[in-house]
Structures are given as C-alpha cells and as structure tokens.
Image (cartoon, rainbow, N blue to C red; front, side, top):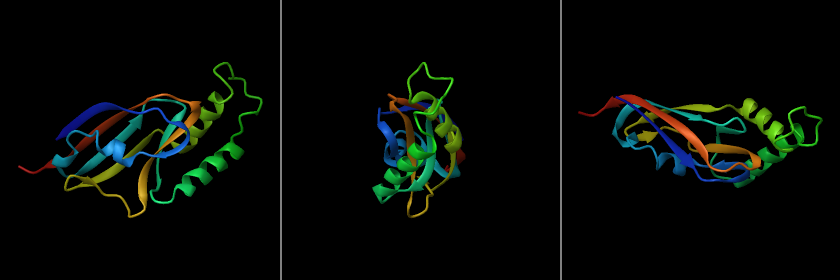
Length: 141
C-alpha cells in the first residue's frame, strides 16, 4: 500500500516545537500499516524537521539558543530583502534537513522512548507549514 497526502502544521513562533501528535493525528491511513515506513517532507526553505528529545522542553530551548549563536541574524548576508531572519532560516533548515524517514509497526510510529518529531521554525513568524507525508507498507488483509 502507498498513501500520500499533504497537510499543514499550524503557525508557530521561531524555535523548536514538538509536533509528533499533530503529525500523527493527520496521517489518515497510518493505523492500517502493519510494517512500513513514513516519509515526511517539509515544503519550505526556512523550516526543518528533525527527531530529538520529546520530554524535556529545555532541550528545545537549548537547541534554539545554540542555533541563534551559531547562525546569527546580524551577519552580513547578501540575501536580506525578506527580513533579517530569512537567510539564517535557510542556513538552519539546510543544516537540519527537510525530511524524516520513520518506521511504522502495527499502525504506529516506532520511535525511541524519548524521541519525538520536531518542527524547526527558523523565521520569527513563519506561518503555516506544509508537510508531504508518504506512507508505504504492508496492510493487514
């Protein structure tokens, strides 16, 4: 079985956001897959997807602080006409990536105990973000 859909994540402020539940709730046929893979792809160049700590929110805060120091907004970027946060957003998105490939078993994601899906919102006000979800796998007959 193959299933593909596009859904939106609600607008979030700049930072890292745990979105596992928001993502899983929108994958229409996830519950049908016995063994498979879910590929998630974000259709934006200034936001990212990554897998990391799902329990302690200070990890997301510390990650944001690290990236703000590592990729500062006040550097002399050529690409600056969309705002001071745009070029740093592109750099952060490239460093973290635009997609995740996750295992599925018995209708659920198979994540580690402390793993969750993060949206890296790298713009001050990025707005809604579109995700393409492609699900493949065996279904119970």
